[in-house]
Image 1: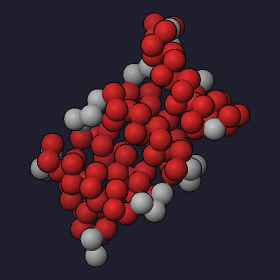
Image 2 (image 1 turned 180 degrees about the vertical axis):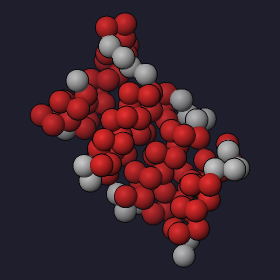
Image 3 (image 1 turned 30 degrees about the vertical axis):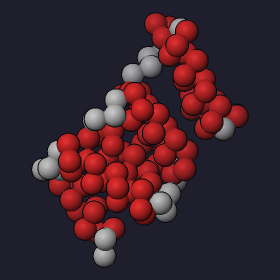
Image 4 (image 1 turned 120 degrees about the vertical axis):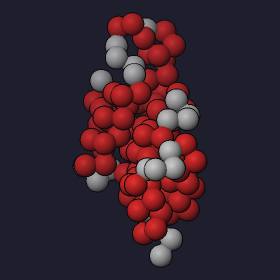
Length: 112
């Protein structure tokens, strides 16, 4: 549903739609952060990093201390060319999961 909304009306419309569904009709849809995470990955695969950022931000808004969700947001920032935000977000990942190899490697690359 959100993917179709992104295609037709843009990512901001999809974010608004998600919030509306979550607040009024959550039992009728899968509103889990897992679904948002999958959508963010799909958008990244389609080279739509800016859209992926918005969807990943939404999942982090719901579960802010999840290193996996933060890692997806960091990757989206990175692919969207937002290097400083990617670095900050990967650092947040490492604060929650010091052994996250992907975050460590990505930070090393970004700081070169």
